[in-house]
Amino acid sequence: MLRLQAPLPERYSAASDDELADMIGAAKAALGRRLFVLGHHYQRDDVMRWADARGDSFGLSRLAAGHEDAEFIVFCGVHFMAESADVLTSDRQSVLLPDLNAGCSMADMADLDQVEEAWDELARIVDVDALVPVTYMNSAAALKAFVGRHGGAVCTSSNARAVLTWALERGERVLFFPDQHLGRNTGYQLGYGADAMRVWDPRLALGGLSELEVKESTLLLWKGHCSVHQRFRPEHVGAFRAEHPDGIVMVHPECAHEVVELGDVVGSTDTIIRAVADAPSGSVIGVATEIHLVKRLDDESPDKTVVCLDPLVCPCSTMSRIDPQHLAWVLEGLVDGQVRNRIVVDPETAEWAEVALERMLALT
Ligand code: 13P
Ligand code: SF4
Image 1 (cartoon, rainbow, N blue to C red):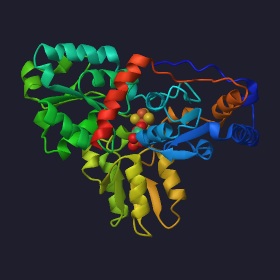
Image 2 (image 1 turned 180 degrees about the horizontal axis):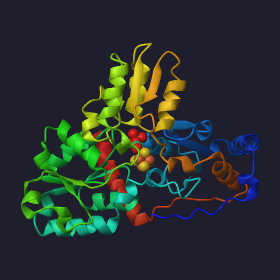
Image 3 (image 1 turned 180 degrees about the vertical axis):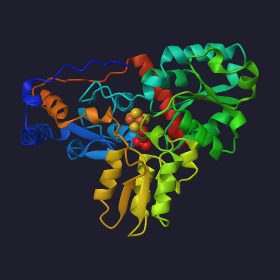
Image 4 (image 1 turned 90 degrees about the vertical axis):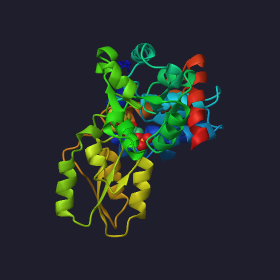
């Protein structure tokens, strides 16, 4: 989805690193407790250094909600995260995203029209009262609201198993979007085979499936993926293990199943961070996730070696859009009384999205 971020004034675009650091430091000091800056683990170091709290996508939204005295939440992450923070915070609080073009290509792979169309198509074949929609946190608020209205729940990479177990106790089958890999990896964990899990391609009639395939499936997996995590291949794990036979492999569940099944640890960014901290001193750890987090783990664990499993891996380009220039621009705006790039979820969408988020919270 295209969200147009206006070019920044020259004061920011032409500023040196030191000048930007001075602007950000001064604005933070002036705003004091009125401001709370959140940094997702995939943020660049020159942004992360200003975060008052770091976390994974869901942990940060929770932190924002718990920080009621902060009038302004500046979310250094991507659009769906800022939306979730807006849904979970009070009306008195404003959530700001420093660059409106910081989206998530995976979240953009499912939109409300497509999901409603899929639901209507499925309703002709199966009983939708026994179909439970589950959306990954990495989705627009409108999709979380759809899920809330239709009796489903949100999940994150750390609680997908609990949420899918709940959903399958509630109904006969699940429509899971937008990440096929998280859905498939969790389905395998729960003991479902490939025949019970079918990919729903939103560009094809009936998702590219026959009526029988739909009826026989327990998990319908939306054809979406993360372009960063999909790059990791089993060959990367093989090459790492050949070089480091005692090494530890840690994999984010947005990776393909062939990679996940080779991992010693599989989990969300927070899980990977904890596992690196718990690994014995001297460990060599190969990680399949975004490069900024991997490099930070290596920098902050001097007694361990942490490497990215794909030597050519690219950063999440949308996360990297948040830079010191945009951060300085939103913070100086706040000092001047201007709330720039506020992310607002409309009240009806927010109400139902919150229902879906609360269902998840009740489970985990
Ligand atoms: P986490 O929920 O693990 O932080 O992951 C968010 C994300 O965007 C992973 O690609
Ligand atoms: Fe989206 Fe992948 Fe970037 Fe995460 S790493 S924000 S899923 S594109």
